[in-house]
Image (cartoon, rainbow, N blue to C red; front, side, top):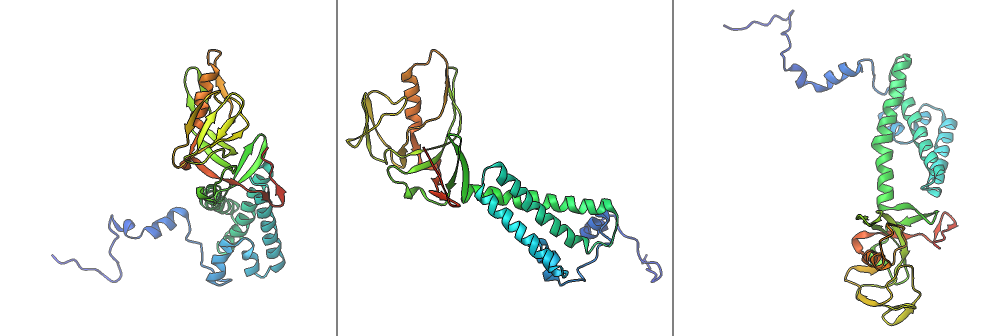
Length: 289
């Protein structure tokens, strides 16, 4: 039997029709039927209004407001980098997001012909989530992982250059590196980051004496918990860096146990390397001692 389709009665949709047009289903769920495309400015301006803070105002003729927002964003970004790792830096990071969210939400609001305060509030919150969690948070993580990273050393904020390779390290270089924690019933060492000078390079002979420590025959001052005697050869792709981290111990732990644990931590692998601190950071000389 042949099915006849009348031009006045179009065929009913099948049960699988909604999966064939996911975009229309998404518009129905999110109530986007009233959203219209960019008509008051070009599509390029609409795109840049979402990407560049303040461009939305410029595209709509508000040049002074656009320059003010862009200048405020640039100033906040400058202070964020200068005060990286501090409360002021975190506040400026939040201000950068606020400038961008306000501008992008304003641009989207021009193409949503509704005066419902809840829908506009939903637009702002959606933009905040997308930019804050989807853009700014990953960019900040990439910044501190591959470019610069703030550290606290002896209650001082030090900014580390993560772009310098391990091959740039020389004897005496101040190096930031990661340490692995150690925990046993008698003594524990917390994991984290350390920053100390390199005392010996790979292949160097380190000899411990009661009054000093010798590196290839060159005498250096002793440091806390160094062994009173013995010698070691620094392995390949390792540096000898004496740590200064705090150790939690029981009364039964001897100085020899502490020296052995710290000597093990003093052999720092290149895989633990984080970077080297900047001598100057935005005009501020960084002090390591």
